[in-house]
Image 1 (cartoon, one colour):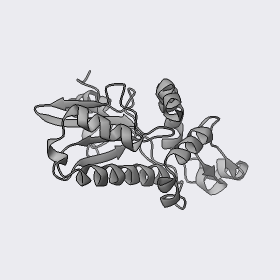
Image 2 (cartoon, rainbow, N blue to C red; image 1 turned 180 degrees about the vertical axis):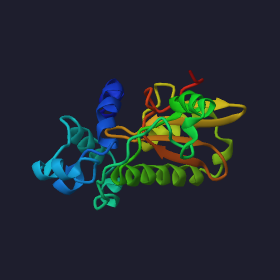
Image 3 (tube, one colour; image 1 turned 90 degrees about the vertical axis):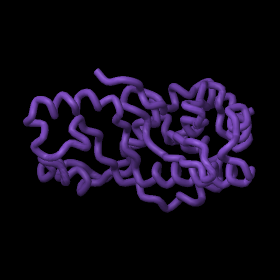
Length: 212
């Protein structure tokens, strides 16, 4: 089966596709010119495709598995997403305060790679696809781990790596969409709550535990 290949190479796929989620795609001289030294750099930078080797193949594999998502997001933009920063969520000037700076450092492990419009569209489409299927069972809020795992597998999302879990009686999942991603994290309820996001900077789709 085609999905077995994705399971065997999931780690490689996540690492490679991080480049895509961080904003690979078409770049032009005007894109470069928006940076601090854009005037000089922009004059030297012709429009070029910057998709790294392997990413296009991963995207093609994902499109073959989920053609309806590919069609829905065919016209989504490919603008670059901003890079995560250690000061994300911290008010301007707050990092001048040592305690605020320390807090930001301790929270850095929660940062994820931000999504491009294309990856956001695909992630949201997959989230909607899973939500619709789970609600169609008529008991989305009461599915057990085994039942959720079976439903995700039926929809084309491998779960052999511990993607399904429970905490405090709430069943949920965190998984990498086969191919170029992104991550999906969800919890079961009458209307399941599913969020698309990039991989955590420390790796994977599960939120790392504990700060530094």
